[in-house]
Amino acid sequence: MTLRLTTLPNGFRIVTEHMPGLKSASAGVWVMAGGRHERAEQNGIAHFLEHMAFKGTKRRTALQIAEEIEDVGGYINAYTSREMTAYYARVLQNDVELALDVIGDIVLNPAFDKKEIEVERHVILQEIGQALDTPDDIIFDWLQEASYPDQSFGRTILGPEERVSSFTRNDLQGFVSEHYGPGQMILAAAGGVDHDAIVAQAEAIFGGMKAKPATTFQPAAFKGAERREVKDLEQVHFAMAFDAPGYRHPDVYTAQVYSMTMGGGMSSRLFQKVREERGLCYSIFAQSGAYEDTGQITIYAGTSAEEIGDLTQITMDELKRAADDMSEAEVARARAQIKAGMLMGLESPSSRAERIARLLAIYGRVPDVEEAVAKIEAVTMADVRRYAGELTATDAALALYGPVERAPTLEEIRKRLAA
Image: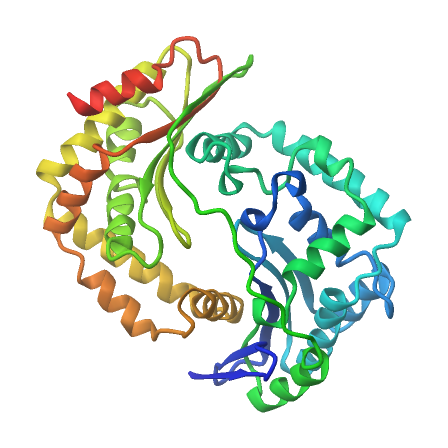
């Protein structure tokens, strides 16, 4: 693998990773502008903007954008996260130039046609409605709000209906003007790519952009709360979050190993205790997420109204027990799972492009894979036990959805963890 990085005079960065033998490539532009960069009155606009990028430019109609990529067998898409918006394509290596031309066009030259804004507004409102009808989807939005109440980091990516219903062309243009500067963008490409050719094209497309001041955002502060939504469903959907390290914190890899031991697979503690031994649910898992200045350990399960009490009790007891009897075998298995998942994923050019863009945004450089592997390997059983003990002493957030009348409150859960 050959990793190369070039920064244009205006601050626009190009990072590529050549993968010998591949005939395809993934390329895109990652913009450091996501949900947490929105003001309260803008909630949902970053996602709206992502949709509008595909609705036509000054050079292409919405249909032409799709046809030009699909005519060569490629794939184009985008996503909005809390910290980034990404526009990317997967194509054969001979079509990278075309892909970058289309991506540059939709990022820099969206038409924001008023008719198309109304069409896409309706699409997004349908997307919001679909999320509300998907309990194991919407509950994570509610958990985020309960974890970070009254903060940009706690707001939904899609935004509330009333905000989405009111965004105008001027609102979209204003967000672009504020956040879409060359210093806030990274062009990342991996696979069958030629770095020098991509830099030359990037300079032609993005080199004329004027630098903008770095944008700031509201710092995140975990302030656990509870959200309980009663609805006549078959199951209670239970989601709980604990404050966890951000991605520059020395414990970030310990948190990953811990969450894997607790609920990262079929051999994990929660899966074995709650599902395999007691049959209290079909699905239960734990996961770790890290961001600029915060992180979360999240636990999710779905169970019947009659058994939510038992499920919660066992889950809390397992969280407490991990501080005393987490074994070396469990930690070794979790380390192996994390390493394998990371390394297997890196066989895909799309995963490679995503990785190098994200790491460059986080660290200002792209650490070697071996560096990440070494940090995972360095996590010990003692580290995980210590982290487990500290976790149950931190604050927590809780979201419940369905027939939740018998579900314990957050205060009751806190007392059990403290006992």
